[in-house]
Amino acid sequence: MNLPAIALSVFRESVRDKVFYNLLLFAVVLVAASLLVGTTTAGQDVKIIKDLGLAATSLFGVFIAVFVGINLVWKEVERRSVYSLLSKPVRRHALVLGKYLGLGLTLLVNVSVMALALYAVLAYMNWSFPENIRRSWEAPALDPALLVAFLLILAQLLVVTAVALFFSTFSSPMLSAVFTFGLYVVGHFNADLKHFEAIVGSRPVAWLARTLYYVLPNLAPFDVKAQVVHGQPIAAGYVGLTLLYAAVYSGMLLGAASLVFARRDLK
Amino acid sequence: MSTRARAWIAGSALAALLGSAVGLQLLRDRWYGEPQPGDALLYVRSPEAMRRLALSYSALLADVYWIRAVQYYGGRRLARDPKGSYDQLYPLLDIATSLDPMFAIAYRFGAVFLSEELPGGAGRPDLAIALLEKGWRSNPAGWQYPYDIAFVHYWTRQDFAAAAEWFAKAADVPGAPWWVRSMAAVTAARGGNRQASRALFRVQLETAESEWVRRNAIERLQQLDAMDQIDALTWASRQFASRHGRFARSWDELAREGLVRGRPVDPAGLPYVLDPETGVASLSPQSTLNPLPTGARGR
Image 1 (cartoon, rainbow over the protein chains, first blue to last red):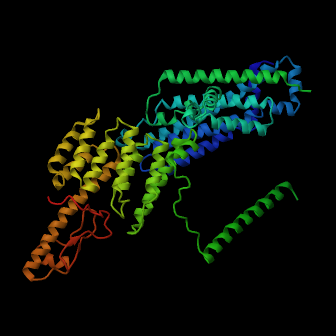
Image 2 (image 1 turned 45 degrees about the horizontal axis):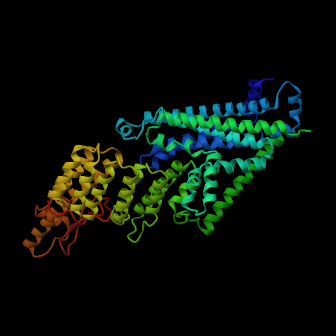
Image 3 (image 1 turned 135 degrees about the horizontal axis):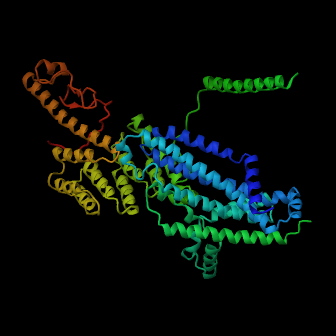
């Protein structure tokens, strides 16, 4: 059994587990919001639909990444199906990597369908508003720059998946969920850690905080939703560096997960 | 009993239970009164705390606070309670703009909500200016913020020197349209004059970037027209008094003298009110043009 086969089996399992039902909820939320917001937002319909679509993509994705991710390895061990898997020519690190790629594929499909649904709703809004109103929007309704926000959301979800998978190799799902959500929250407060010396006098504590800033996953840079919605430019170099950071950090976590799982006594 | 029949019975029982719950609720509301929504509450008043709690969802949360601000303002405005207050309006707008510092409409419309005189708005031009200054600090390239501050000074505070100064600041921002500079000059030379005010709002109407700004300019122009009409009607009423030694009791009396044509209505379509004691014409209390600005006198 090779990597693509493991990845596809994880993807198929996601389909069987009705993970994609969240897409239906997403579509309902978007359509309902597009019908309702016009009466309550003083002309901010398109901005709010974009904010809502991007935030929901990120939020649903985080829930999938965490709640599916924390079970990926743990479930195989708990069900003892890991024995039949490892009796085949499958190495433990390939199992970890295959599981990650499978969930990554699930998230890719999820984010892509959500992006399409958001563009469909925005196309309808673009069509339904007259030219003079469309001219007053900060960014066009069908702004291609939204894809940058979706790309960085996907990259962030892949980092969160790697975190969840790492904990899944040695911890129970409950603890893994707590640790992953904890790191997800801390990942958005990293700027505070970097400037900790501004609020504490102790140099060792400030030094420790600064170390944590570099060691813990920094998720705040992946959030460009507001800039995109307001039509602000995002430098290609920034996007490239952030994607590279996601790849390197996820690679480090997957390496650590493989090491932990390889040393784990499964008897 | 077949499986299908059992499913039907179970479904019917569930529907009956739900129907009973709804019926009980209706009964309770009828007998003991419907629950009233509580006053608008702000559980978190610190914009900074809210920004941190929002994680990466601050833009969406800003939208929620903006919708709350619009609904709060709309509810208070429709209530037209002379004693009503808009005390939650600024905190709501402050949080919305802290969560999304680029939320231009929240600064600009929010400033209009805050600067309008009571009961049509919060009657707090100072907070309107503070909100716009915050917007300009966050978006230094936005000439619209000092431009809107100039309008608050001009229309609400009647401080024409400050208005001219802010129009000039707006004109100094790179990318500001050429006519902003002329607004600074007109305000400095003829601030408070109704014709000058009309010229400013006509420019605002012609250059409006959004429907809401356009409607606001139309309302201001209608208010200026109403002020002219009130002056003319009061003059007609005084003419009547000089002929008859008393003020007219109704518009019909003035119409019979040929001083007015029919029952005069304001630009919003509501009839003017004539005070038979003082002879002064005014807007109907129901008119959407209320309150008229206290300054901008003289044609």
